[in-house]
Image 1 (cartoon, helix red, strand yellow):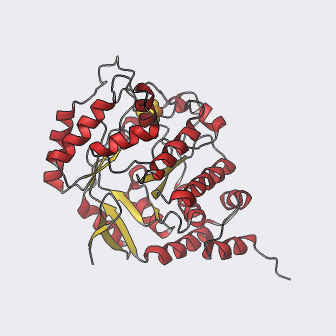
Image 2: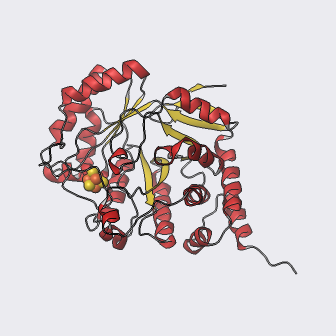
Length: 367
Ligand code: SF4
């Protein structure tokens, strides 16, 4: 008699878009063969976007590295006293973004920095409105929930009013940074402020309720276990069912270099490729069509792993990179990645590259 494989039942329900339980997600993390997960995840993705893989002409700009949160996993922040601490003026930001836009046809600006106590809402409104006045066709994907919460507290405004005010000045979408793992015990070890997981979900829910779309992320490969990741994915799914405000999900692996977690010996090595692909595949199986875009996060893993992630269920490459500063702070080389390289990388694995804008609308297909 052949024993039934519990995974068959999970996949059968996943193929019909049915919910997967916490225990089943942990089981997929702990026991299921990676190839089986990958094939199932790719099949689901084929049913959503077929062979198309999207990317965006993007630039990442870190307007300040001064931050009063001081997370243990972050090698980017400065307290403000160091020689290399910096904050750019609105005019410096606009000038640089315009230069990049003109040179590379940038459609999306991902702008975020630290939680800088000196910056109030007027700074952000000036930055966003000046960008929109000077470069109206660029989409602004800006600020983490930590930055937004801090601005609202500093200005004694509700999160909803803060978001509405930032949107009025030009903010289009909010990136998913700061989600890490929602569990409070894990966040305590990462030195995230208490309650900051719930705060992330609250800010995102408020944004979705007023029609501001956002992205979601999960950082794995540090001190979390399979149940923490399962709970994280299920929290995202629960919120998505309310307003459908998440445009995409990116699972990304922790880079320990130059971080306090590494110095204290809590995490010494980054996870390997198998773990990266497992997270891509499981997130696709769990989030399914509810969050239709899973990003490959090539940034921390290189072009080849970006290609593998597509086979394991990702359908978005993310963006071009020019001048990113957060990952290089860990000692990892990122370099720049131009549009032509992305198109070639997607074509080389037999997929069809499609260029999108900040709102995930397709603007060009590269047949
Ligand atoms: S991860 Fe963000 S909030 Fe945490 S220390 Fe770094 S810049 Fe600050």
